Length: 573
Image 1 (cartoon, rainbow, N blue to C red):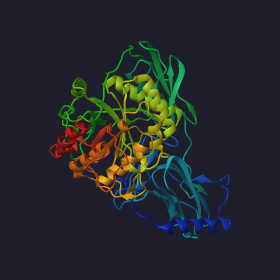
Image 2: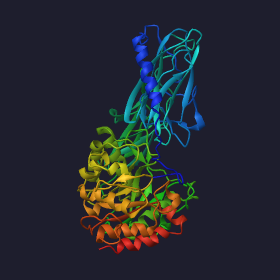
Image 3: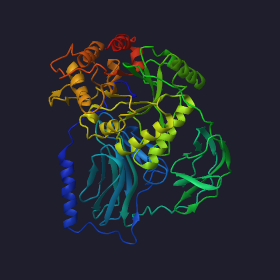
């Protein structure tokens, strides 16, 4: 989902072949001439602040496109995240001192969208390499030789126009010392301060503490015994007994060793109890409520019309623990909307028969679940939010990659904790649901027995294949029906399929359709009427309904979308 008005997240530009070809030719030439060599004992890493532990010191990022994030990181406690926008490819660079007539190895670890690594000003052949994007950390590496008069080069990384943000960490420019010298090794870090207990469930306690300079990780102790580790400044200790008091402490670690443990804090797990019991209507309307101000009408939950049956609170925030999430109400951005009001409004909506769920991801989301540990962290933290705020379930809106194996594990674990009342929705992009072999589609099928609805985003897409193998352009009845057919015939129950569209022309970069087209598509799929040129081979009367981004953009347009689509969804057979 989009945080910025009218932006397009999936705009593509053709990538020039020349740069990649030249990089290959250059790399081949280096190999042939013997310039690629093994680093000698005297070689050092000439890059400064190579792991971004000192923020953006020594680095320059075009157009303020780069930022430091605590997670995910390859090493240490920080990494670079740079986001291409418009004609800016989010280039970040550093001037590095080198020796003339010397060979250097340039490398970096990258993750996310398209990522390029290169060097210029070598005095010989400038080289580069790239990755087409990866959900896990991938190492890029190349070599270069300096010219007879070269004492400084510029190393850089950048993404690609219109593509997702990329992450970079742990740069190396390995070779003879150019005069900058290698940065000193670590010393044992100081003891963390500020340890505090946060949200608790019947089986877990969330903890946070202050960052320690030079630390690359932290160890959490429960009653004096090691309980878990973290690369950031928070962690959730799980596997605890309900209504029981525990003592927790934390230490900081790095390559030099482990600090003294912090002073202990006490926390008691929650008593056994049940969360809110809900029922989603046979035909339902889902709307995303914005916990931020991006130019759309600012709303309280109480401002969301009754036409919405499922309200997805957008969005949860990633924590320093991979897979774990938390929620921070944007009180300042929402005109002073308080936490107490928010919690009260959740209960009021539920009393009116509505479901309020927490959405994970969005356009700028960085939550990553690709291991057993992160799957457990995800399920524990989402369940903790459900216990704390009373959310009825979770929405999966991860737009920067999803691992079916571990997201399935995470949702299964969450279901085991929350029980049969759990609401699970998904909002994949069109490309994610073109084939049952896609990670999103596989996840939906894997959790079909506990899945509520998949509301695919039929916008910011461009042309896509329908279930009949023909190409359809977004913005038409045929686009909605022919693509929905893939899910309906690919294994999902009709009750698990919804049509997701923008509430107004300002709600997305492209793909807006009027409410009348949405209603026509619903009729076509559910009743076989009002179809375009594509008509499905059968009807799906139990089709779940529709979704929109967002209730705020709907409000901005005078609620034209919900006033038209809401009653129509309820009138379906």
